[in-house]
Image (cartoon, rainbow, N blue to C red; front, side):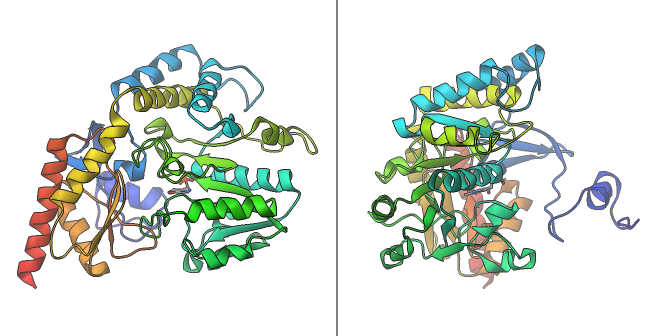
Length: 404
Ligand SMILES: Cc1ncc(COP(=O)(O)O)c(C=O)c1O
């Protein structure tokens, strides 16, 4: 076995025994985390502007989420595969979610991850329409299992895994002319409401409504992937609420349980019924709807919808935009607390991310936009924390400016 000779202890074991996804992991050794901070094994605090990539909506170890997990852990954990037994937190969660969604999204299937939710949504669309074609957007990211990879619009990251799903075609996000591709053969169009990996690209005014209209004309379903923008991150519970466009199938994940692995897709009761027969068990999952995760999701949803977090998200966006003014920042993309600084090139983005990491500020990359620096902090981040982090970013940019 190849062990990494230059590293010691935990770091060496991490690189040797835990499968790696890149040759240069950040390798922060975590001791504990609380609120907007992650503490490393030397005791240093790192201000978190990333929230585990839009996951820890309520910050790290929010007391209400921790209490919900602890209480549920004392009652029962896994008792049966998805959908057989009545488990109170799972039912309560699906019901509460329905009360916050448009009436055609009343029934929810809870799964284990975002990508599994996308798989479920694609299968559901094929079952409901009896059609096979799926249309996705170029530069879209929907996850990494084979079906989700098939609808990813970035050949460099998927070519090596072909053959993928047949009958998938692509349109340019925000291009109205392309909507002609949606036809009576199309089972579904899948779109991120706000394109994440592509660089936090917002839909142009009216675009999603036009997609909706074309889908209705052709009898195709519209699947919206809100795995990243969902659960309050953009200043509404779901980003589609900004654009006056309701999907047929809504896909969720990430911030839903504020730090536990989860995914879900919602559709009408009638559509969801198709998973019950011909064949029955149209989607099977052992751990989907897990009571511990449902309890954390319930606590998260209550906190997000009952408190002031959602309106404050837009105030916090304003603060970021006011503080992050610098000649090296070409643009700030995104909405709410899903923001991306667009810099001159990849080298500059790398420098800002790595130099800020050294100063105790966590920033991150976006998948397909090398010039971007991701800012997606917990929704609970305070004004003072935003000010402190932005000061570190500006200080770093000044250093780059002065050295060039
Ligand atoms: C828009 C979008 N869809 C799907 C996924 C996949 O979710 P997961 O990593 O939980 O499978 C992600 C994750 O980054 C995402 O941002």
